[in-house]
Amino acid sequence: MNFKAVILAAGKGTRMKSKFPKVIHKVCGKEMVNHVIDVCKKSGVNDIVTILGHESEVVKEKLPQNTMIAMQTEQLGTGHAVIMAKEYINDEDTIVVLCGDTPLVKEDTLKKLFDYHVDNEYHATVLTTKVENPTGYGRIIRDENQDLLKIVEQKDANEEEKKAKEINSGIYCFNGKSLRESLDLLDNNNAQGEYYLTDTIKIMRDKGQKVGAFNGSTIEELMGVNSRVELSTAEQIMKRRINESHMVNGVTIIDTNATYIEADVEIGNDTIVYPGAMLKGNTKIGSSCVIGMNCSITNSQLGDYTEVESSTIVDSTVGENTTVGPYAYLRPKSNIGNNVKIGDFVEVKNATIEDNSKASHLSYIGDAHVGKDVNIGCGVVFVNYDGKNKFKSVVKDGAFIGSNSNLVAPVTVEEKGYVATGSTITDNVPQGALAIARQRQVVKEGWVEQKDQKDNK
Ligand code: UD1
Ligand code: CA
Image 1 (tube, rainbow, N blue to C red):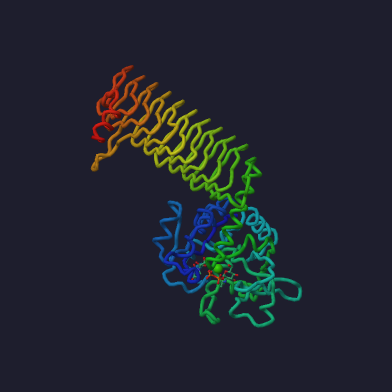
Image 2: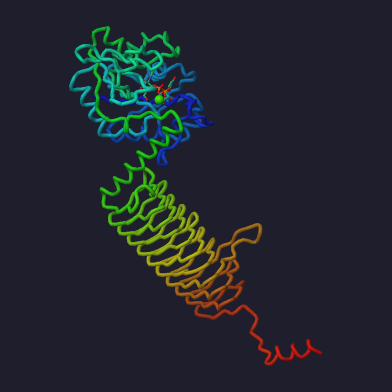
């Protein structure tokens, strides 16, 4: 059986009160529509068409490359949206329809829905759930045998129908042929003047085709996001789910409420995450690491046994058994090796620091290559910018840069070169040499007494 997914994502999402289309608002760092695309793929459906309309260019930019899209230039309803994908729907296909605004649906639930649909030989199966407060959702109406009769939208429901507690998730499986034929029969004679996809159920049933409702999950999973309040609810649910999955994999999270981990982050086992951690984007943390309090780590990779505290790391890599912080800032393109110490108030940008080197306190290391076993003293500044251009400095293996020195780029300190404290280095330092670039100290004995005598005259 050939499964194909059609994802509806053409709407504006008026209730979001946003200049951006609804489906690109993020839940745990990932656009809602991309959550839906990813879960389709995980459940084995790789043939995916996304329906775009409102601000389609903006949405398209956020989709994975090579995604198939169909355009719905005027948003005339969910049924009309699926009609826009008709050329992709073949008679023998099983079509899974999902909405771009239900980001929490799980792979397992989709698989169960597919099985239910196939096993019962339904022409259409709708995924439903029961809720205390069904306000806003389409209601599932069953007949006296508890078989699915139709779906009625909130705005079209009579008092009796409004009482139904079983709601439409907006996720369905359809037999391709039956779907194509029923789409042709849709009309917009309803409260919203829209072509409702939900009406295909009644159309099929009236033709004598078997339709089913699979009450297969909870509202926690199937909720649609229509407003910022619902977006925040979805965020909380997803956050908890992500944190729990890391804990199941062997990660200790001290305070799950105070830990924010985005959807695609990977963490090795025996790593401990302290409160205030924000792990974002394409971040990968090794095993047995300590992510101390108040760390923000974005699109970065950390090796095993590395410890970070109260620091920010962006678009960078850090090796194994290295310590970062407290209060360090690794800006983009920092590549830190193994057994390195990046201490308090050290800022690194576009720089490589190789194994066993140390910058323990108060330094700026920008546009640099620092070799192995190098000691960067307290308060060292890599002076990389002349007001117009940036230049690179190189500090080779075993070099020692004394405290409060400036390396004015471009400059090279050769292997085991030694820079005396307080130097401003503008010329290369040869291998094994000492460079002192400051005034020699002058001592004037008895100067204070002489001054006092002068002043008192
Ligand atoms: C829809 C269902 C409702 C269900 C609910 C579940 C219909 C008529 N109603 O209602 O039964 O309980 O989802 O969350 O299907 N879209 C388009 N083109 C359009 C209209 C909508 O692509 O012309 C897309 C939207 O971008 C959105 C999705 O379809 O991603 C659902 O649209 P929305 O307006 O949120 O539908 P609901 O009123 O929530
Ligand atoms: Ca919705």
